Length: 418
Image 1 (cartoon, rainbow, N blue to C red):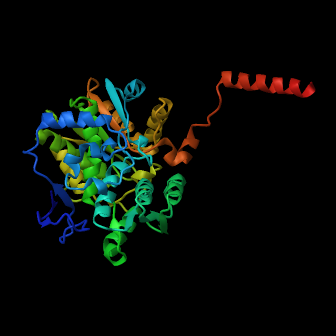
Image 2 (image 1 turned 90 degrees about the vertical axis):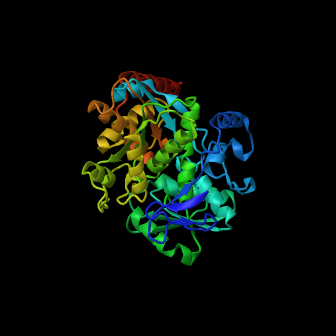
Image 3 (image 1 turned 90 degrees about the horizontal axis):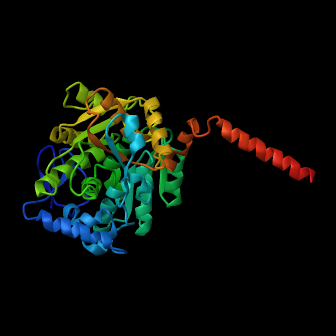
């Protein structure tokens, strides 16, 4: 394993707490895949499904050979993350207008979001390096995930969260795990810039998606999808685009699965952004190669409120490798999709529902054919943003509900008279 800058190709030692190259470029883990035997790996990963109470019971560390083979087992910090459901959702398929939709419920992770897949690897690596203070800037899910893992291994977490635009439930979850909360005026981007400038000064190990180990852990999402589908991939994978770490990890994971020989075909990737926070989509649509940050953000899907996504270059590589597309959706479209997902019995936070909303729009525009299949990644739990439910969960009762309530009131009146 080695760290390589995606801009200048300079190599760095993996055993240093470094998250960027000296040139400012993002770093990426590179491994040699030629020595790996695909059939042997399939047998090994299948056998590990029976693991209990060991690191390999994790849906991330099951694939340790593809993620961080050099990490000692005793350094692994795990809550048996991953192992999330892949649900055949007929109602969602009808809503989106395609033949088959599978929902990958990353909301079933221990802290309630996909961040756990990457955080277990970042924190484990920092733990192995002897770091004691872990930090992140966050719109909510990253902070609660980091606080959970830091608490689990007896470390301290410092989380930088904007004063506005973050769901209260995510902040409270972070505090419950013992995270040291730093609220500040500004955006996620401001917090990340501060950490990158001052992490060394305060002895902080940064666990945002600029940390290449986060991306390695998040690759496991697509590894697990492939294994659950017996190594036969769908036509499309749809993912929401905030910091774009998931899109970056998705592309890297697909490329590696194909290079090893674990899958034959690579699905196309669709990255969905909210119209009120869509700098990456605007760049791609304009055919540009440089992202212009979006200073003013406006979407109720708070996890997407990121105007300068740090992983945009890696996400662009994902689009290039998979012949992928981007699309934007309105908050109204997001919440319409969320209601369908919630009423299906799975549920998700608004940012997750952007995937289904985006799939519906792409199908309507015939970019995705109605006979194709898609996996939509649900990134966060229904209760991550409970306030979002107020828009429709308490709507006017139906007639049968009213009749039952009236009957109960009649019965209570009789009981009081008796």
